Image (tube, rainbow, N blue to C red; front, side, top):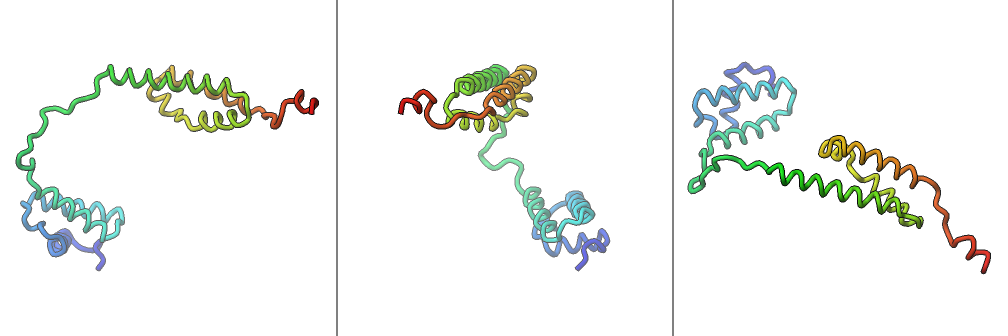
Length: 164
């Protein structure tokens, strides 16, 4: 059956036949459900997904507002700015410690590891969470990465090779 070709009343009857509990809702909520189905049909969503969406929406509309025995909290607590500042400070400290470790990397395995660690730092998050300080840290990361891109000598140092 082509649902897009159905009129509003035909779509309403079709949904009532296929979704249990839709008839139990009041007229206003049924109209909301039918309009939602129309919008989904306009977006060319598959009919089985539309029916699934309608079923879940009807279940939510039919559910009681507050489960028995539970009280709603008066307000939702926001994280205090002090906690955010502490988290930002920890992020800065961790990033700076990683940069110190990257600058001190000398052996090839350390350099390779630090390249991976520096590349895995989420720069967008640093900029978002720290602002200008995050931008400066991203510049330091770029500088450290450019230093780590130089080739690393493998094997024993030259003095040890000559002695052997």
